[in-house]
Length: 486
Image 1: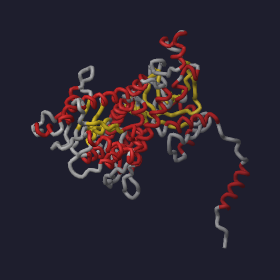
Image 2 (image 1 turned 90 degrees about the vertical axis):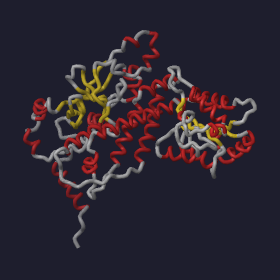
Image 3 (image 1 turned 135 degrees about the horizontal axis):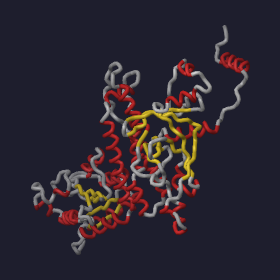
Image 4 (image 1 turned 60 degrees about the vertical axis):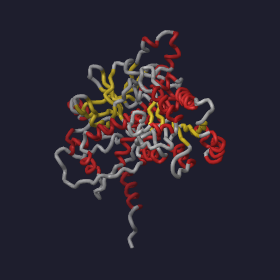
């Protein structure tokens, strides 16, 4: 559905939807008679229907450009096509208003005006708004054949059907709104006031930087993993690789926009530790660390398990290889195994006891500082906490060297000589493997976690210095940072 803003000139309309205008008691017949061409256009657009009989257009009218601007700045209205009537009541700077519209939106603007102004307006536009000429169209309102409303309607329809930016923009906006709604819904189930306290600085000021980063990332995830957008782009001949690159760019822009917004901090309450603080902070970090894509594609950083639930893994295969899976990998999917620390505790203790007495693990103040700071041996490991299952959250130990590969056979739908091209460009989906996805590690944690696994396997370490030399070099370093005696 395409949105259109229809500003009203010389009318007494307030900022209400045009769809209500013909039936509104406040809209007297004489008001419409002042601009019959615009009235015909509105009625024509309102009668336009899709194949399933749903309205083709969503219309809103604003009596003055400033009313549209106020609605736009408040986040209440967005439009792909705008009809701008050059003549308004009061003192309106048309060039200034058009520049605000054109620099703040992707909208195409149709300037609807009287015949005696067309040449003059074109000169003004060329002089002051020349950089936007591709998005500005001037149409004579008072044509001799009394069909100007139909001409404008045809031009709007042509733009809607031919310009991919409009169709993509509408779906993009719907996807972003859906992702934001889901994020806010999830956060609304938590005690936000208490979270602000737990994350507050020593001065008691709420730090919303983490909130903004998290919201931006969730919106970006929803955008990149929306199947409707993918299908729309595929229908336009956009390849999978180009799609991923496009959505990465758009998603990053939106994420940065959210991060740069000034959010008003709520006052942070004072108080001691409470009974439910542990549950609150775990729920927040579980939401921040993971998400579950709505589509069926296997992705780097997916946490998956066998259909019978017996084993869990983290996907290591890079995104570019998963996009053209059989062509780039020969059917090999790389994974690192995860261990439920509650369920597998006896096995983990047995392995740890091979090289160190278990009581030694209790001597140190053990802190899990992040996903990417490996814990003490054996073998190098890190912790993936609060992974959300249907039955509750689980903690997994990642054995960083326990990497394995599985072979994924080419599915029947891609077999045969006639499917060679489709096979070469096919991505891996969960219908092709004997696993199901639990969730996926979210950015900005995903890439560093995968890099930690690979760096541990590569083994960048070298032989230690002898003990005596370690002591000698340590003493020299201490002397370097010691003030000389006076």
